[in-house]
Length: 294
Image 1 (cartoon, rainbow, N blue to C red):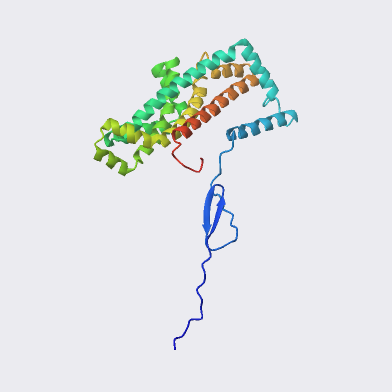
Image 2: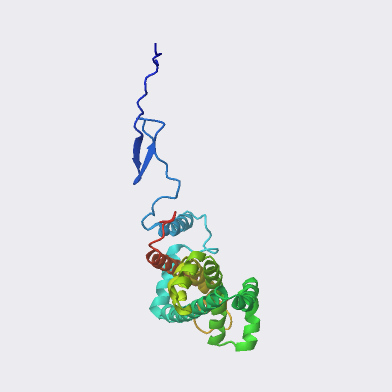
């Protein structure tokens, strides 16, 4: 007589499908129990998120000035700074000096980015080029810009060319470092595919090398934009006759702290909006890439 099994086949419980934050997750262990999916990344971007930090700083400045916590001799109240800016605009001083500073920073930024990308291509696509280029770049990277100014004054004088050269040499370093690193990180399979289909050197650079190095390039560009304004602050206070730095130097001579703060605010705003602009271009150019910051 056959022995019948007392155990009955147990019907498998259908896995629970959980939807949260636009993602679907299956939890086969918990059955009908609701499972809350966690998002481990930073989440979606906050509208106008870049303005929150500066807004908080401005609020703290207004409150501490109004309550007397902040000494006006140390840092004038925002209303005083706004009045000083209004007077400078009425006199035309702010516009003329601002135009000079923007021209210096813009010309130097363009030159620095172009030179940095070319040097990164030379060093990133050739071992001989890397042996020639990378060493001097690393040496310049270790030397502060301020330390080179006396030597550049001897070589190029105290005119406009010296200022542009100082800013340019400062800007090209981050562009070179980051672009070169991503060029070296291009997938070897892409290189092999380019060789298989017979791409020329120029076609390889345009279709494989440059697109592969774009993330590093934009990282270097963001740093370069900031560094261009930092270097501008330095060079415009060395025998300059125009520019925001010159305006600040004159104000320091006469103890006009409010005008010094106006200059600092102008530098800060240009640095902030330049970075926001580069980040917007980066998101558009690298829309295919998904990351935690997206």
